[in-house]
Image: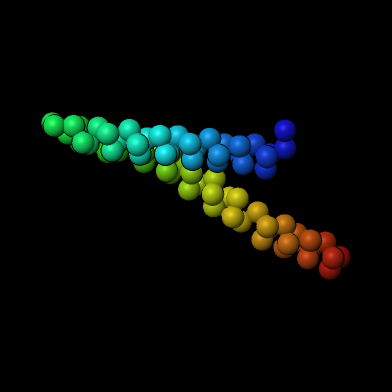
Amino acid sequence: MAWNTWIRQVHRWLSVMFVASVIGTTIALAQKPPLVWVSYVPLLPLALLSITGIYLFALPYVGRRRQAEQGLR
Protein backbone atom coordinates (compact mmCIF):
# COMPACT_ATOMS: atom_id res chain seq x y z
CA MET A 1 0.00 0.00 0.00
CA ALA A 2 1.29 3.43 -0.89
CA TRP A 3 2.34 5.79 1.89
CA ASN A 4 -0.35 8.39 1.07
CA THR A 5 -3.06 5.73 0.99
CA TRP A 6 -1.93 4.44 4.37
CA ILE A 7 -2.07 7.94 5.88
CA ARG A 8 -5.56 8.44 4.43
CA GLN A 9 -6.80 5.19 5.99
CA VAL A 10 -5.29 6.11 9.36
CA HIS A 11 -6.95 9.52 9.14
CA ARG A 12 -10.35 7.92 8.48
CA TRP A 13 -10.05 5.50 11.40
CA LEU A 14 -8.84 8.27 13.69
CA SER A 15 -11.94 10.27 12.83
CA VAL A 16 -14.11 7.29 13.81
CA MET A 17 -12.19 6.97 17.08
CA PHE A 18 -12.55 10.69 17.75
CA VAL A 19 -16.32 10.67 17.22
CA ALA A 20 -16.70 7.60 19.43
CA SER A 21 -14.60 9.18 22.18
CA VAL A 22 -16.63 12.41 22.06
CA ILE A 23 -19.88 10.44 22.33
CA GLY A 24 -18.44 8.41 25.22
CA THR A 25 -17.22 11.56 26.94
CA THR A 26 -20.64 13.19 26.60
CA ILE A 27 -22.28 10.16 28.17
CA ALA A 28 -19.71 10.01 30.98
CA LEU A 29 -20.09 13.69 31.80
CA ALA A 30 -23.90 13.37 31.90
CA GLN A 31 -23.70 10.92 34.84
CA LYS A 32 -24.66 12.15 38.29
CA PRO A 33 -21.12 12.29 39.69
CA PRO A 34 -19.45 13.33 36.41
CA LEU A 35 -16.16 11.65 35.56
CA VAL A 36 -14.15 14.75 34.73
CA TRP A 37 -10.95 12.89 33.73
CA VAL A 38 -12.86 11.34 30.82
CA SER A 39 -13.00 14.77 29.17
CA TYR A 40 -9.31 14.35 28.26
CA VAL A 41 -9.86 11.12 26.31
CA PRO A 42 -10.69 12.77 22.93
CA LEU A 43 -7.47 14.80 22.95
CA LEU A 44 -5.19 12.00 21.74
CA PRO A 45 -7.26 11.11 18.65
CA LEU A 46 -7.72 14.82 17.99
CA ALA A 47 -3.97 15.47 18.08
CA LEU A 48 -3.25 12.55 15.75
CA LEU A 49 -6.13 13.61 13.50
CA SER A 50 -4.64 17.10 13.30
CA ILE A 51 -1.22 15.76 12.30
CA THR A 52 -2.57 13.50 9.56
CA GLY A 53 -4.98 16.23 8.40
CA ILE A 54 -2.19 18.77 8.01
CA TYR A 55 -0.18 16.21 6.05
CA LEU A 56 -3.11 15.47 3.74
CA PHE A 57 -3.83 19.18 3.33
CA ALA A 58 -0.24 19.91 2.30
CA LEU A 59 0.05 17.02 -0.19
CA PRO A 60 -1.32 18.84 -3.28
CA TYR A 61 0.83 21.90 -2.65
CA VAL A 62 4.00 19.85 -2.25
CA GLY A 63 3.14 17.91 -5.41
CA ARG A 64 2.68 21.09 -7.42
CA ARG A 65 5.95 22.47 -6.17
CA ARG A 66 7.80 19.28 -7.13
CA GLN A 67 6.24 19.33 -10.60
CA ALA A 68 7.25 22.96 -11.04
CA GLU A 69 10.83 22.20 -9.98
CA GLN A 70 11.06 19.28 -12.39
CA GLY A 71 9.72 21.46 -15.20
CA LEU A 72 12.45 24.02 -14.63
CA ARG A 73 15.26 21.52 -15.06
